Amino acid sequence: MDNSLFLRRVFTLDAATCFGFFALLTFGAATLAPLTGLDTGLLRGAGLYLLPCAALFLWLGTRPQPPVALSVIGILGNIAWVAKSIAVLAIFKAELTLFGNAFVAAQGAGVLGLVLLETVGLRRMRAAV
Image (cartoon, rainbow, N blue to C red; front, side, top):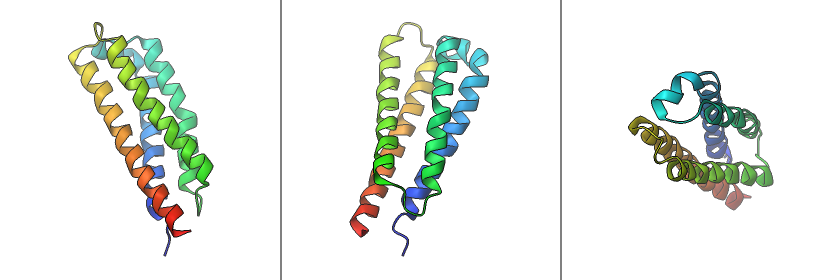
């Protein structure tokens, strides 16, 4: 039985969402800025940050057994993203629109969900070894 399949599928999902948000935030920053209340540069910078993350998760998702150390680094990066999302909600509270609050909170919650799934997958894989 393949004890890493669940983890690899979650990493692949994470890669897809990172690529999607990379494109949305990088190329759609000018459209999103007035909708969210966030600066175009902040949105674009966040999008560019996601490209190497997407590459890492895609690579992890294609390994027969994702390396534990790199898996942990990816999960910690996601935890940092969640923390930064909370910081954006706090720091830019006055500037954020209702949509901006919902947008930042929803993507932060989604990434937290990925963290939980990746943690479960990593534990399952390690327990089977």
